[in-house]
Length: 93
Image 1 (cartoon, rainbow, N blue to C red):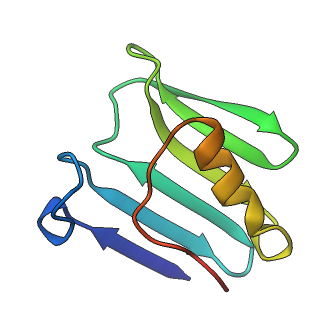
Image 2: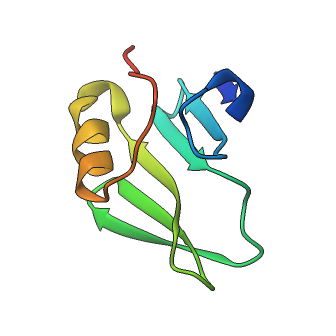
């Protein structure tokens, strides 16, 4: 299991954001969350095994989850680009 937290102090050019990265090796599930968790949220499966979590009040994207991540690591970059999300690290396994 991998868990990594990046604070805004570590990222000089990022805009008051924090990121959390969670990887469950046994389940092969990667999740990246953006900022503080909202009070109310919902998750949509935008394609098979790819999930976007949004703040229910603002519709702001708060997370991206990918099942079978090892087999399709490229989908993370495509999903972030699709929703115009910036993430300061690359992830590879």
